[in-house]
Image 1 (cartoon, helix red, strand yellow):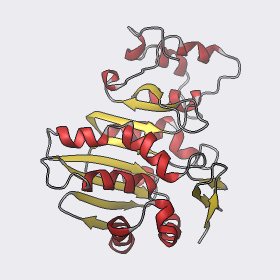
Image 2: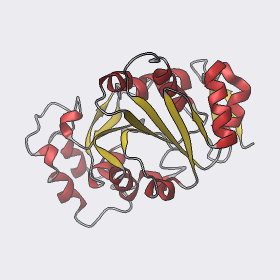
Image 3: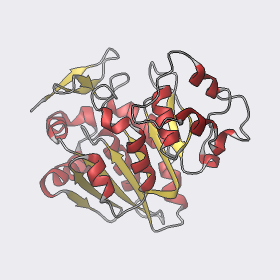
Image 4: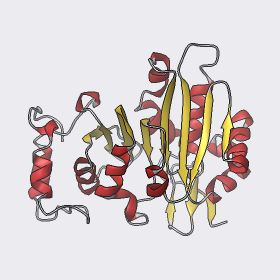
Length: 275
């Protein structure tokens, strides 16, 4: 087990990967961050209630200790007896050690009761199926499993380790792969607000906006296939960052990266108030 449970500065328990040297949900802890950053921003409950399709698909990229997935699973299960859409929850992960350790600290990671039983089934069988929710595991390298995924994502929780620890999942190619697996009304949410990551998203075909702050983070990032689905899309004011001498572009950027970003549709008629 290359994971350990640690206590954050805010007092919450969180999971630390010894291999990556990083803590998952390091600020406010896994229960609060998964709810505010991913479930609430994606309006998951609202989208499940609204339909109009029979199934809503969520890609949970970076299962980790299961916090984001369990938060989504719990929302779906709470809608039992309603006409809400069924949730298909696909968790992408290559190392299941964090979830195994989290199950020994159930309350800290939201894994008590039925949620814990669902997580144990995921570990044992690669899936858990209920009347409301299908939760299944796509195990292996994320970019390989994403390429072979049959479902199209309506919502993507993008929560791998940081670009320092897992650089392959923060590239133009990675976000292009996510875009290729996205439904027409898909949205994506992540904890990073770096200019480099936002450029990678834009070059990968996403419209990009400002996500809600969480803990010490003033901003996170929201992205969408259609810019009209963003509450606070980046505008031309933000483009000034690309002229700074310290502006770093993704390593796999094309030679004309800045020109391509400037030509993105969301900047053609954007108001100059987001940044």
